[in-house]
Length: 118
Image (cartoon, rainbow, N blue to C red):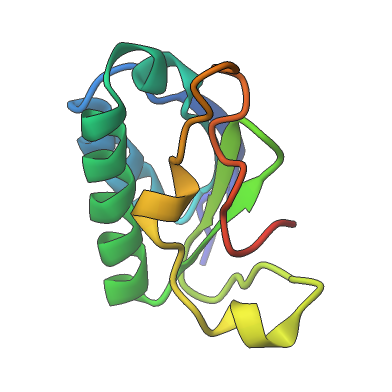
């Protein structure tokens, strides 16, 4: 029996509607690197909502989600876990509020206070 290929995809989060596309990709079994900067530049509140929705969805299906640098998050499907330097943080959710704390003087530091970094 042939298995469908697993892909690692880079996608931008440009608007709230992109959350459904990301959920579909994760359900398909793909690993995603999502750039959150495009939506965060438009609306911090919508970005927080999107991250919260993605975190809840990923946890509900047994996947994983973590910050990847300053502007991206990585999302994995069930069966793929993200290695973290600190084992205590691997059991903790990414708090959306902390993940998206913006420093008023620097738009590029969108994820400054996320609890886990790859």
